Length: 266
Image (cartoon, rainbow, N blue to C red; front, side):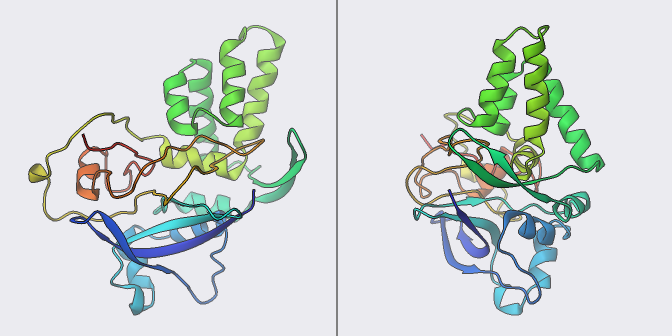
């Protein structure tokens, strides 16, 4: 399924829990029309404020940036913006376009085949979790209903001493080279699991740095898939989830807000 990417800025109102005044960010000389091109641009900034100050003053009122994804069937959802990752800039600048065989046809993907330490360390971390059969962590990072998780399940459910399992592990390593899969690791590896939790807003500091929250407007959406379109995306009404201050209470730092968080207030 074709996707269109835009870097967008908006104003998040923590009282109404709504994103307003959304606007596509345009930067002279930058083609911000793909996931890797946007990452290559934003990852060079130390954080939200550094990016905001670099933009045209007409965007300075925005208090959150995110990556808007629009599919060819009209569905819209959002990815988090990645900051302060110089190595990611190098990786995003070194991708190779390739065709990957799927169940029904071939599709075009962007792969990283280099030896940057950020990427190599990421795979070693994922490989360790796969060998340990840490299904909970792997699902939290990559989701449960996509082709990468199907490969993970093939490995976990098989005999790790037979040749097929070794072959599956090699397939997982190759599949991890797809930029969208690797990026999913970067944004989700530190994500906390929060279920049925109500955080009192009175205990939240009134002054916090606003960071983008991954969100979507309506319907099911297709996330990352190495084969057919993925159905692993939670459905929620963006007016009912925790506000940004509350979410930050459950995160582990300004740049590790659980962007894929879907906990509802109870």
